[in-house]
Image (cartoon, rainbow, N blue to C red; front, side):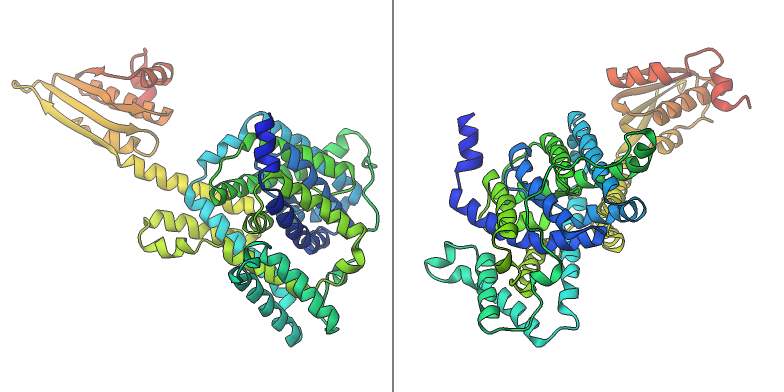
Length: 496
């Protein structure tokens, strides 16, 4: 217990605190922007980010990962807020949390193993593009000061680490934000600031039970939204956890993260916040700023609220150009540039899955749709590839009366037609032996193919013997096969 506390909370105190401060500064404009997208007051997103970050620091399964209000979740709330109002959004947030806890208990986090590396890469690249695109409104129809400040910010971020001694002590994004804020204040530069994004709350969140009727009608209204929020939230959180695992060369408990996200969303809903999930951009900022433990996530949430309530006057003066520079750094750092270099070496199917995932996510701004399409494509390519790893060879005895077929490989829906086509039903033999010692039957399509082969041979007058079925294949054949049951010929061949 103590070892876990030391490793996850106290092993990197300075790095976690500084990284948490950087993340908190970057969270504010994003939380406000996501609130505007959802159609609610900015304080809803800010309260959500505070509650979720603080709670997930204790109950999450991935130390060092940042969770808060996100754009992917905000997009799913628009219609609910427009048609039913904030109270129903808070109720939907509570139900989202309950559903995510159930998903965690059912260990649905283990399903991440079915998401291929090409889908994860496409997801990462798409998010990098979306993060960059989200900064474009801050860089269009603006004065030259904005471009100069943004360029200066990027210069600080990438060059400050090379400054002797102090370059390694302070996170360069934090230096960028503080430095450009001081310049903007001292020189009185007329530039868009955090204060221009929206009104900041001046009090801590309070306990707030949603003012909605507790009946079936309410459930019917919020359930579709809650289910969508739960799935998208866990999908983005699981993908982000996988990316942070790679960045830190550590592992995480995906099912605990599912439950943790649910608990955090329930907490957010009870204190006036909207549903959220893990944020890949902020998580990358945290890791690249030196954050590794749970303390960084806790500091991000706590410092976010401290700044809003206590340091709001200073906070309002942070130029958006500084935060744009940080997010552009995140976009550049998030994009898997190696995936472009490796496209010539990777199989065509891998490249198609990756590019399709990117295109769909960027086009729809919906991570669930993009990842779903990517997983489906990857599964289709895999099934097609495995379907080719099935071979049927044959030999005949000396007197030409017994044909011996040997099946090698996997027989399932993709290879079933090839399996049937490998047999010569018109050959005049007395007996056919089908040796399945080196084969495996996976589904009812494969069983149906075996039925068809056996019945066809019998109709041609041959005696058929099936040998060598392994235990798993024998189980599914015995359960679903009909070739050894009365009336099999009529059932398989349709009576013709």
